[in-house]
Image (cartoon, rainbow, N blue to C red; front, side, top):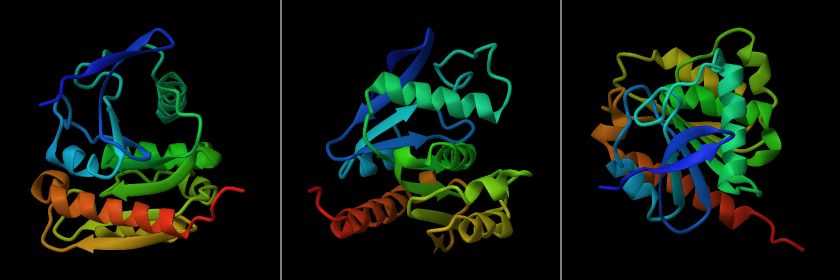
Length: 204
């Protein structure tokens, strides 16, 4: 159990749960996955500093009347990044709705994202496919092999449109794979991030 702390983001209170040691990892939740520190968060925190905010209008974060579309939400998360003091690049993970938001963020602010992981992402509305070409970081796209909510074609299209993406299919997992197989999901993400770290050139 990990209680939320509230962060002021330009006057808007945001519920944030944070734990772990390592490179910062911003985790954006799916619809309904709020109010709890999940096992997938705990497993990720074994290798990263996991920062898990709640979207405006979800969980303990109050709705905001300025939030009208995805663009507003993307800017909100850049404001949250600043409020958190994240000045360097960070790893960005999004599940379902959070995957859509994460993809839009990485396309809008490509220089800020070190790696992008999309877990069973929804979305891909016009003209988003063209926007995804702006993502410059390596990406991992995770498909739930038995997903009955998000078609495999949607997930695989994300993988094909992102310039530096690879697809991982977790067989037998439904759309709630972060609850069904949290350790498998977290292990795949941490391996992906560690592989990137090992291949990065040291700073001069």
